[in-house]
Length: 295
Image (cartoon, rainbow, N blue to C red; front, top):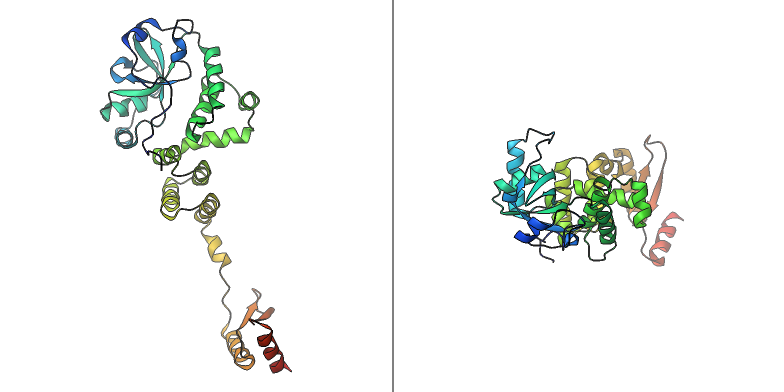
């Protein structure tokens, strides 16, 4: 199995040098390609929140829960920053930034936006999505960036990358999975197909239940889908159970079984008025024996 705590991204992958922090601010600056489309590690101390952030309240318990998840799994989805001289302003991901500080992280993975980088970023992301070594979560993150940061519609994106809209939609839905499940997909412990079966359940507790069932019992994708359906429709199991037969039919069943010297099963309709008799035989000899009793 691959390393469960797999590092995000394969870009620069290191803290920026002082020279890069000071010199590269625009997409036209030399070395800008190191940032655009890549994930880089940024020092927490160099990041500041956006003063115009509409969200002003952050639930303390939820932040502490996220901080614990980050301690265990790392930051699954990088934040997005705007380069401002030697500092970085948060565009999106302030909750992850705050939780990372609580978790005691020194750096955080981030996407960097530079001045005038729109066209360059689009080319980098479209090129990135064609790579064969991306895992399903990285693909979903790239689709999301093309939609949110570039402002593409799903239809435009579908044409641009040569994928069906449903494929893109299903991919992005994986980002709604909890960090443990996303990390299991990234590490190869489960597949994207398993992830889609899990996300089909709206209830978080059911999702967790199915995830544990998949990993402990080694379910394949088809089995995971069936398990998801059973969790969504618990009554379906009861409906498929054999209907109980009356004591009257049980008595006839036993009488016939004794007389014909074979297993006999009586199946009745729901109203109990119609039905059929099933006789078991293993070979021609047993069939002849049943016929002789009937004759």
